[in-house]
Length: 288
Image 1 (tube, helix red, strand yellow):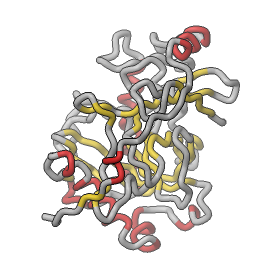
Image 2 (cartoon, helix red, strand yellow):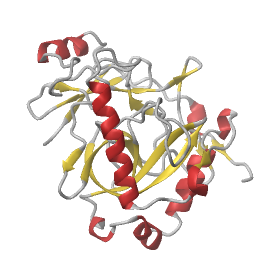
Image 3 (tube, helix red, strand yellow):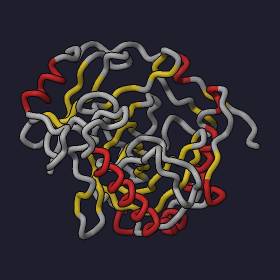
């Protein structure tokens, strides 16, 4: 199963979108139409890369837009870029989401005591390859971190691209600790402090910032898949856009013509706008 992308609008502008196509060249939703499992028997998952490693633009699946293309988050009327907080440069993994999952904002998690953040579950690929924006990779899940982001449960799944040369050596979260010492600590540090340059407090974590293992992580993913199933089969999904092209029984399933019409209504791909100079600024502050 393969997927391609089509860029629309101007990069580094609010018009910019990344739409997805299946192997037949037909437009699809990365949220709803890409299967969660790449290989269910082996627990291999698909992951949609929103933000490649070392980059700063806060790209994300547009859950409220038709066909859910990638677009850059906007805060206070400005495109959002994640700050470089010492010793990190942009994102320190290929960061993205597992399709066909949803952290239900009406469900209070029994482990964290907080409701979901209304998004697909996040994934951090620790493989050596720097992926491309919109790339769909297959990953082996290793564990998860329970971030509490402004009072919401925001699971961060730690995974490795199955095509990574060292993928066979990584089978659980302890393998990351053993083979890439310091990486898990850096991950906690990154998520704890990345919003501080924007004037916000450090983020908190459930389980005292400890990582849960592979089995725990897979159970969390599967539970968010069940919430997604309920969402995509609703007649009037809450705020989110469930337009899809292949989910059997979904009232939001549309024709290929309707999907193409969504894309045609957006701006054609154009010239990249300049990146704000502040994106390269370096921040340092003493840890609490």
